[in-house]
Length: 299
Image (cartoon, rainbow, N blue to C red):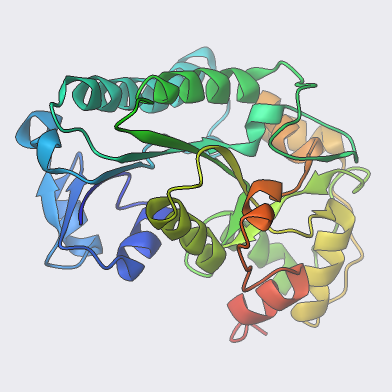
């Protein structure tokens, strides 16, 4: 199997490449030198889609995109977030459409931000009552562009990713310092839901979409047991054997992050129904099991 990956040097991309068994893996990168340091030697690195013959590809996995929570959402940063997703996806779709023998599968990233802020109501891939805000706007257009690759020859999967938990980066690494000092706690009311996924299950989901042709369309990449922010804080503190006494007021988060604080202050209770109905087995279905595995050396 010949696979092209965008975003291959990111947290999810690196983890996926470790577990891929493919004849040929090509990674589109902006920096050959940086990618050489992060990825195995056998990976082919290219800086332009023009260097790739799409007739020779079996699968395209599109994971590229500017981190959505690392910086304040200025007008300029919002534009960067959007274009870093939309433009590469459109470029990939154009190449797939132009191919005489196109890849049979296009696995394209998205996020549970597609649903916008939601209450405690459990929602799955069929949920239509969307809250129209920036995160939805980004994901809705991202998915719409990717869907253009759908044809009799090419299957499209849209991976609506939740909060990815890993021990070498991502959201958990940003949370750890205050919690390890015993200064962690819920944010605002703590009632907002956090739909999370262990990095190993995230990789397993991507592998399933690559190899299981019955999967297509939107797929929620979240664990089957989401928790509230308060539950997450209490579980993380317990795994670290630390107290959970402090609360972070909403206004503090807004001062620090501006509009992007909404991603933390509001949540979604997202369920991976499509995966469950296709007999997908989660290795880490509960938060306690996931955190214990990830933080075994962090007490």
